[in-house]
Length: 229
Length: 405
Image 1 (cartoon, rainbow over the protein chains, first blue to last red):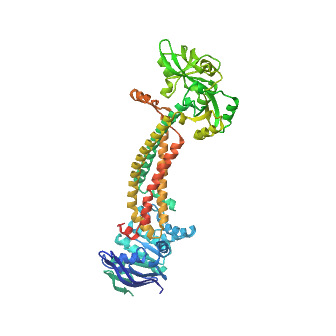
Image 2 (image 1 turned 90 degrees about the vertical axis):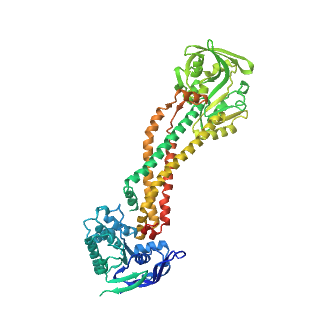
Image 3 (image 1 turned 180 degrees about the vertical axis):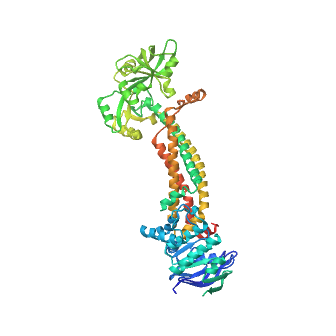
């Protein structure tokens, strides 16, 4: 399988000059296309920091994050924003849809930022929202949707830009069991049917059970990296 | 989509949008009220001064220092056509002026006697509209028009006779009896208390100054070009004559306006500051509430400048609504006071008359006030909206997502 993310000797230290906190220590990790990976660990283990570094949202203290042959740690901020837009889909814990836009517009928004043609946008919005089971809620505003439905719109939004992979930070943390299962079903299906790569940070056992690879972080270091058969 | 996003954001927290727009509305409303009152006062002061002095005058170069008949001049058709050739001069009225003792049966008072060609004055200053009782005189009549203050002082009415006694050109005595055909009312108390108008020929005859004039009152097309017009005329007319603007003839009025305008600007600045801080408070709250959202939008690939333009558009919408509503709210109020000026009570009236100011609060509807005040407040609102733009430019995405920015 094609390697799409290569992490080499990645370190992130907060307050290096005062009270250093090593959030990520010497991490080496490779993520291949089509993987469904959960990064797990207790609170403060560095899951979110690692995800932020992978998403180019934070700068590493040292090391490399190579995505599709590009070391994103060497990019300036403007190039990074553009790189994220074209290559990475994000799903956040608190859904984070734009409250004044409808489900359809939230998904379309990403494609507008990419300057995609109207026809393509309309077709993709419909197909993505249908894929996440919200084909009949295109015009609903986020406040008119349940938490689970909002998170499904967020998944559709993350996929709208045709990213190389999706980073999901605790995507099920705010969902009830039924909504979490539905969301995981959808993501699993998209992974299997369309080959979309998902990388989660989570301490939700339901996600861990579904993941085919589980990377366990402790104190910023990889303690185990298990691939399920 | 960015415009749609900005527009819909207005309805996201309606109360906050309303508070911000209302702050702008009240800023515009009060700024317009203050400025209209000030401009109204200035316009009225200038009107009262220019009613008698005109916007500019041509007279003998020593006349303004020493207003005697020795400093009068002989008019000529060449001079008149030279003055009228100037692009900004649209008309002129000849006058002769002198001082005399005005008397009724048992009361006397020093008065300024002005000989005028009534038809020409009418074109310049709409003399007829100032007549309180009676009528204006004809060119060949031996009649007088009195200012109302002087008429009251002398207990004279239309139909009574006024006696004038003074000194004319080259020391000749000046004496005459004139039936009163009209009483005229001026806004400026000092003018209102001492003016007597006679037909020009009659006044020249009274002062034994036949064929001589004290001044030409000039009517100008564009008041803003008044100062330049006077300067240009000074270079064109004969050496013994000069052109003066009303600001040069009555500098105290121009100085009062200048000083009051400066005080008004300070008061306006304080108003802008108070309202500005009010707007800033709501913008600050809005920015704090949306920091997380800014972080998310930048994370998913929205460029900072696009996010900044959304914020600017939001500010633009709110400021435009506030300014337009402020003008809409203020206009009928100003319109009412424009046609119904506020008359001051007797104590204030006495005080204002002491300073030769008409005891009436006039309001102005000068479009310049609406444009400038609307623009200033709009600009203030836009400048304040640079705070979220600054925050977006400095935003650390991870901190914003963690809620620690």
